[in-house]
Image (cartoon, rainbow, N blue to C red; front, side, top):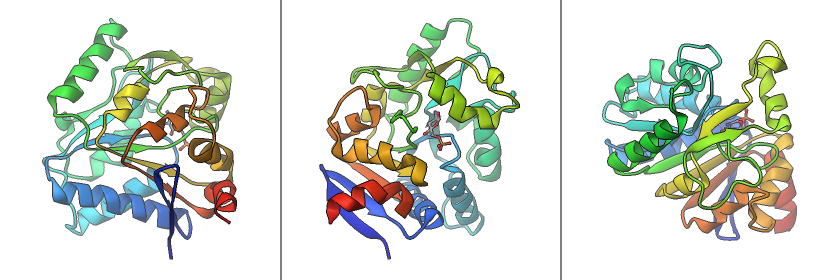
Length: 255
Ligand code: GLP
């Protein structure tokens, strides 16, 4: 049985385990697509959403959800990695989701980490999201330091899609996807906090004990740029989906 409560206006669902959390998030995304087959989805990379994408792939195979008319925008991309680089977020998405569902690849967008003019390309990305009608549902993970997408601590409330420098902690955490830490790019393109807050609905998924402090700061700490995820408390339609280890520090607050 899921446990559900509202903390600082954020709807929070604690599922039985990580797989239950993945099913819950996949269910929210599938409901969104069923309700509006032309939905614009905001998608995320990282280890956390992989199980959710797996559930969506299975649902699509069973004919329970149809992605043919969906458009998607990913949150971020490493600078310097082309889409065919195995560690690029474009390659990750093609492998983990797009290549296994019926979304036309030309309706999927990931920032271009190899654009010759990064600033112009970021402005174009913002315009493309606007032209698509804005994001209906944005999926997010959370970094150990509270980052969302690649909005590291200090990212401002009004930030938009831009080039950022990654923190040493983020480089270290993401090194597991590369052969060695020095292969992790130092810079990335990320949607900004304001870009994310423009989404009509936000679903944040966090699993594992390593995320417990970040989840607590997001839900119950001060709303400050030092903890970017806390800025989500300025949005009126956020659902936080957790497994019990990620929820440990907030379930205590409930008792
Ligand atoms: C990355 C991504 C974020 C993601 C975070 C957590 O740096 N840019 O979008 O939420 O890391 O990743 P993981 O799910 O692997 O813990």
